[in-house]
Image (tube, rainbow, N blue to C red):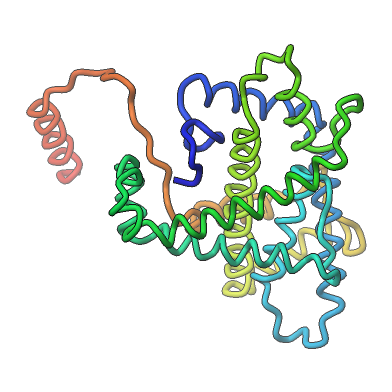
Amino acid sequence: MFHEKLNVGVIFSEGTAWRDQRRLSLHLLRDLGMSRTIMEENIMLSVDELITQIDSLDDKDNVNFSHLIHLTIGNVINLICFGFMYKHDEERVKEFYDFQEVVDKVMVQNQNWQFRTLSMFPALEKIALCKHFLFRPFSKNNRILKEMNLLKIREAEKTFNPEFQPQNFTHGLFKEIRNPDSRYSYLTDDHIHGMIFDFYFAGQETSTSVSRWIILFLMEHKNIQHKLQKEIDDNVGRDNRIKMADKIHLPYLNAFIYESLRCANISKFELLYYFEEQLINVCFFSYIHSYSCLHKRYNNC
């Protein structure tokens, strides 16, 4: 799948490795102060950069919001994982869009039958013939993503000092895993890469997808735009920033966000789950009989 080794990262792991990586991740996020206030500050920094980028555009009537949103969401995640953000007018921002271009290719590949087959039967990747002919494009892009992610990790490692309090998620992983007295010291650099990649990949794609759907809904329903703007003007003010503290005063905005989440097609593929043991013995014929009774009952209502 996304990782060459088993039980690396949070998404595709299981058992003790999954539990410890999940527990360590939550522990570090709490220690880093990922409360609503800190998260809100990171979001505001990224929004400021978005506004600056929009103001710098010459043609404001033709704006590729998908392009802008990717960077805005990515900056929030970068601040958490690596402690830095990209400026829209700096040369290094190209590395972000290069990374995102490969991610988009992977997301398209995730829809084909080869990926779905690999998801159901991951052992097929060990067969040379299958790996070469069926999964080669996916493996190639996956390898590129890993290399680009490792560059960010190595860059963050240059500023890591075990004597100081971690300033970002990557520093926290280094400090915990490389401490011989830590219960997580058995984890390796592969686990560091896996955890960061999973958080980045999952957060980037879902948040970007939601934001794009919200913009699409607002473009389609301009009457809702006017209602939202009026509620914000009346309760927050046109010249003030919306903060989490304003949430209780913006019921219509909250309802719009929840309805957007309900209607939007957020994820392009679902994660697979399985049971390690049979939990309930179900009689197939009893199930069919119960379903038939319920179906008949509701059809007669």
